[in-house]
Image 1 (tube, helix red, strand yellow):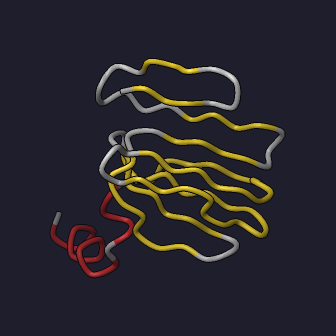
Image 2: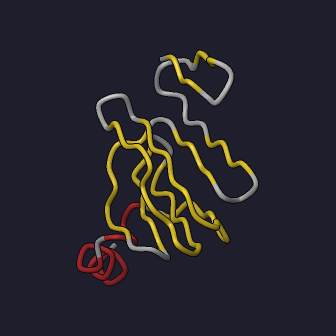
Image 3: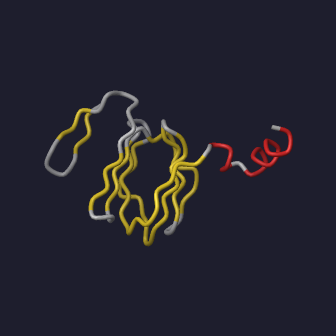
Length: 100
């Protein structure tokens, strides 16, 4: 997969997950499978490495290409955290806690 950063082209092995964060204001991600939910303060992004929870201010999508697995966000990034996949689905997570 070829990834075009501002002044350079980077070759990323297929399936590799890469995060590039510039000055906490612009974030580029690879191996994005889906955006589960989002608003200006939070994004839940399904990646090849699990769910990435991004918190910040004035977050917005600048570029999205799910076929290529590319996502670019702008805004002020405060927190990035990987979550277990079950945590997004409240019912499944509750059942898992009770019977899992």
